[in-house]
Amino acid sequence: MKSEDFIIRAENVKKRYVLGGEELWALKGVSLDIARHEFISIMGPSGSGKSTFFNQIGALDVPTEGRIFFEGQSLFDLSESEQAWVRCNKIGYIFQTFNLIAVMSALQNVMLPMVFQGASKPEATERATGILERVGLGHRLHHKPLELSGGQQQRCAIARALANTPDVVLADEPTGNLDTKTGSEIIALLKSLNTEKGVTVICSTHDTKMLASSDRVCWIRDGRIEKVSTGSEFRVEEMEKDKLGR
Image (cartoon, rainbow, N blue to C red; front, side, top):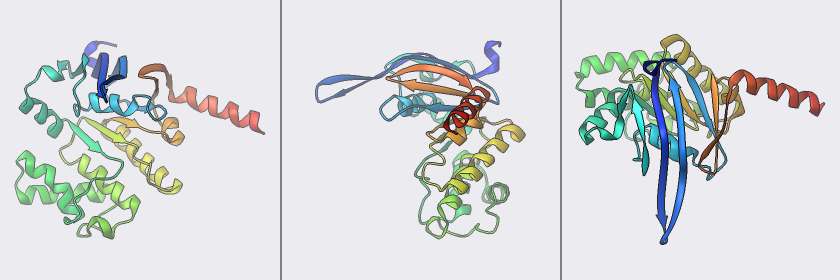
């Protein structure tokens, strides 16, 4: 593939933390190219560096060494205001704990990024209503987060991530707090956004159902990429395990 076909490129990314006077390298040189319109899952045990890497490619944290490129531009060579513009306009974030504002309705939560972007209230209201209808919350526009189920809160969080029509959606354990049925519905929703709208979806996950829906799966262990497999390879592996288990 040509370099312009990749929306995000991580180049020898390293991340060091100092805890109690001791150095801890959470990432030890991770390189990964993510194609436009790809659905990719990042998988790894607790402490593997998975979440740290996730934060680097989402411009939420700065690498100690290495570079992150977004649409060919080195993210951390940008000014803080330019980085903020990328986060506001190009990337949508879905957090495991939803991070919805409790005193605001679903509609107001989704409108908020649009207001920051400069949209008028009538425009933001119309756009937010349309997005909430798309994720199945058209009948819950004026309900506050605590009046919504866990699955509905996650749908609202997805709607908020889509508020400014991002090119990339970063989803941190999007099914982690959900039951199996609701989790499957959220995976299907993210997959439809990827296939129908061309949104690049990057998930940090432990959910094997998410992996099976992915174009690629990046396995991280001890701060390094252990392997990268396709979703179809993962499905074949799971089928073989099922056969052996019978």
